[in-house]
Length: 107
Image (cartoon, rainbow, N blue to C red; front, side, top):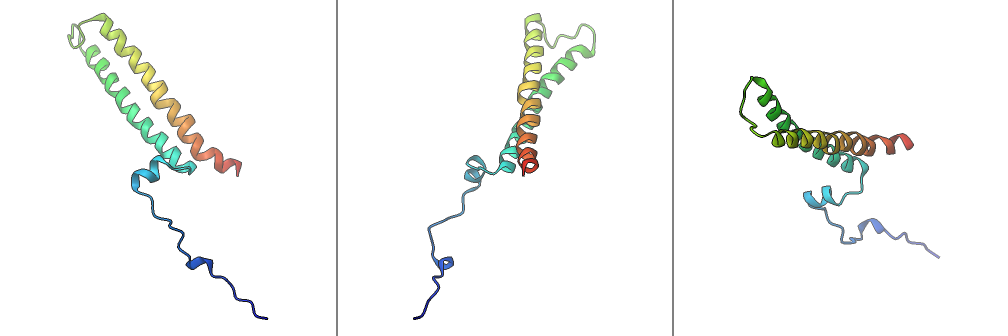
């Protein structure tokens, strides 16, 4: 009686390499998800930074007329605060760092 080993390594199961977009948007790897959170937090931080620069430009000189309406000033200050908290700080710290490091700490 002879036994032959089946070589399953040579069988092609139809696996293919994912495209760049599919790799990043349909990933279940915790490091890829953390990288996406950090990337989007950076983009949100840039947007909040632009609002901060608008506020700094207004306050640079007395009687500066970049923002002429008080309601617009209040809207920019509020938007800056909300964007920096909910689009920058929380995604970067909780989403990004949490997805990167917590699975490695758990084991």
